[in-house]
Length: 218
Image 1 (tube, rainbow, N blue to C red):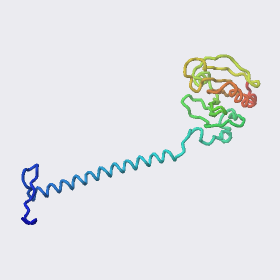
Image 2 (spheres, rainbow, N blue to C red; image 1 turned 90 degrees about the vertical axis):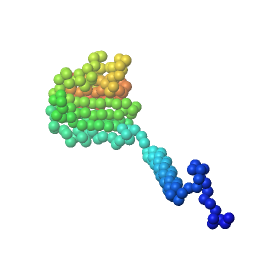
Image 3 (cartoon, helix red, strand yellow; image 1 turned 30 degrees about the horizontal axis):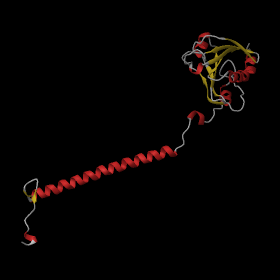
């Protein structure tokens, strides 16, 4: 028998030769399966490429502490621009090298009806100290600033008497009011608060002393 007259092969699943229609259907299904496998492979390759790109970006892009890398705030210039808007001059401490500010603003139209001048400071030892100067404030406002801490005593720094609030050994999380100093001068209630150690609080209080005396501090 010549190859041209060779009978069609018997398909095991059918137990007989395929019909032309069955052969066409089988080939169409095989083509569809091949396309599906190619699509899945392409998706996997695309996903792997995306993951690789993300890894490269993470490794290449510099990272760091946003607060530490942000440029310092020039609170002296901000205060100069706002001077005259309040009954007392805004306090502007001159601090040694290594101190920097990350925030400064004159807060007006507040919910407590008390305007205040705020400076946020980062100390050379990486701690925080905030200065808030409230104008025509009452005792309730001061109590809110120090998170209603109880007075621990008084402290004289360069001729200015401060009330001291020390929550560092309270056993609870005092947040940014771990330690605070308060005083009054002129029509200002001044609160110095934060997480720094005594020597850094003294540095800030000393830098404010001359201006507080000018306002009429005690």
